[in-house]
Image 1 (cartoon, rainbow, N blue to C red):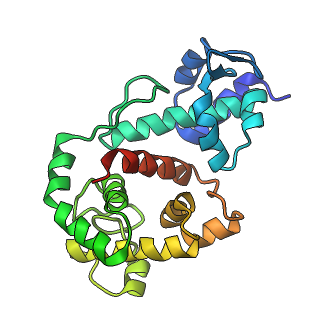
Image 2 (image 1 turned 90 degrees about the vertical axis):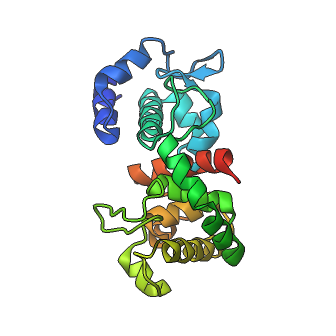
Length: 237
């Protein structure tokens, strides 16, 4: 059996969460395999999170019964909540379900581009709310955004994908139209499965197929999919 301290250290390194924060959550946790008040295990994870972990390829029984798996799952939630806050989405408390909010600056840009998003939705069949959520997560509606991986613009279009689609990714409207078409292509490839579509958008379709048509075991992708889904459910137009 792996010592709990080693599990905490590994989870901390994997998700870039301070060990002290993990330890603070565990002070109010439960023994592995124990559920009380709708919470489970050393990190006291709410049972409502179990379907999310199943979607990510983690077995609910492992999260419930294995202390290390519970610590990894709970640490992932901490990292996920922190990523929402970094994107301008506020949620106080480590695991609490609450309304999603965006910053005033992002909200203003979102309104300014809403008609373009609606046109892209009409042309591609991708829901406007989904396009909206992807743009919010990818760039916060910043047309000149460039990632460390050289992804470009509103929807962070990779140059190779832009060349495949044809168009100018530096043109903000074209960027939205091109990437909305790409989302539509991925949705067809993965039979309308929204989780796999978003995972493929983030990590590439080959990564999803290599993972047995499950969300790849990449920290970024496992955070990205539920983040977009949360925004999609809250920001639908």
